[in-house]
Image (tube, rainbow, N blue to C red; front, side, top):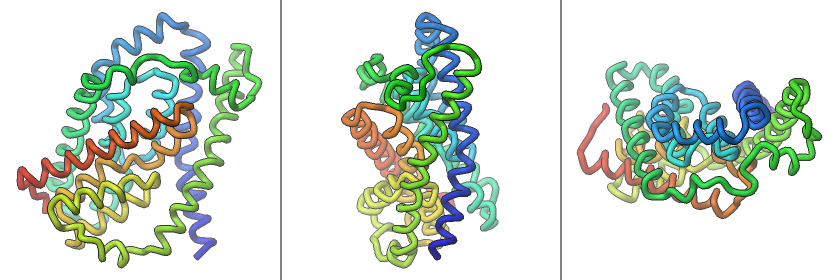
Amino acid sequence: MIWDLILDTLLDTAKLLPFLFLTYLLMEYLEHRTGDKTLAVIRRADRMGPLFGGVLGIVPQCGFSAAASGFYAGRVIRIGTLIAVFMSTSDEMLPIMLSRRVPVLTVLKILLVKAGLAVAAGFLVDYLFPKFNIRKIGSSIHDLCEHDKCGCESDNSENIFRSSLMHTLQIAVFILAVSFALNLMVEVLGEEGLRALILNQPVVGELLAGVMGLLPNCAASVMITTLYLDGAMSAGAMMSGLLVGAGVGLIVLFRTNRNLVENIKITVLLYGCGVLGGLLVNAARITFI
């Protein structure tokens, strides 16, 4: 069992490496080459970010949430865009539903509702919490370089490439350790233990599913999707869990964004938005299957 867990963790982490590397490479380029004026333009243009984030997040891959965390840490994107990506991210939901031969129209309906709620939440968060978008100390790639001591002070292309690679490897080790611990916990608890929870009851189901979704690992979406398809979870609870489930995005956020209090606030905000989305699905009596 241990060897299987190690192999699964290594494979999951390996899938993220290209996304992480490209994220750091772009952050390095923007910081070193474009200057503060260009970054300011990007941040202003990103007022429509939640729309694009909600659409891109549908792609079944944890990498987009990881990339969004890195961009937020460098203040390339706004908090609303980050929340929209986190909530829209599908992780393993889509492959599992297709493998279980769920009708394509049903899958599309779930994805559209999920993306719609993510986009709406993103715009709402940007409007209600503008202070998150103010650039703070510790929010640039230079600050990450200082903290990680990667020695990338100069701005030549070779150093940008090397420092991006070093940042990627450092965070990959962090993700590897956390993911293994979470996979081990899921293996010990098992699906039967999760079935004992009251996941098909109004309100309670959404609250508990949201907690499950907070597990910063792709395994969370696997469990939530499977339980829903097996009838052990309501549509509202399923939506809450999947909206909150940001894959490894939260791991990357806590590793790259130096403000711990802010990271905790973002996690609470994500949980609240996800549970509210599930409650709305339940109140509207939306059914998918």
